[in-house]
Amino acid sequence: MKTSVISLRRRQFMAAGLAAAAAPAALFAGPASAAHHNEIASAIALGGAGKMIVSGRVLDADRRPLAGARVEMWRPEAQTERTGVATDADGRFFVIITPAGRGRPQLVHYRVSHRGRVVTENSLHFEREPGVPDDRIAQLQRDDSGAWRATFGLTLA
Image (cartoon, rainbow, N blue to C red; front, top):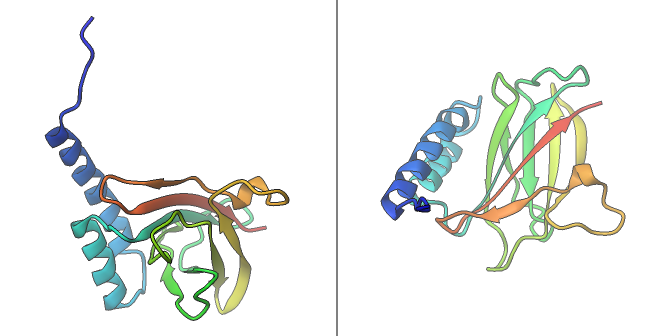
């Protein structure tokens, strides 16, 4: 039986298709600054090497998408370097962070606010650690372009 091998060219087309599918949600995710839109577009176009891309979805207590929530993320060692975006109509967000150093990022802090009040603030870990609940752990992978990628969902109680 012959095994199926996906060519490099085909993988590039598949990756480009996934990036294109992710771009509209990211680019139209609500009232974010033009600089942030440019950063998202350049990360998608250039492959995002040296970046960490965290995406996800925020739901309210009734498990409905929370549109217009502000999601901010930052590295623990860079409290003042926060990146924030608004969730789209489906509660989705797309944040790009520059991780410290060249190694695997361990965690990021995040805050979600809605209608002027902080709904939750916590940290998202990328490795299992004693005492860290499973809902605060996300899988982190490096893509073909060298960018770190993680996805997580958040349901607010």
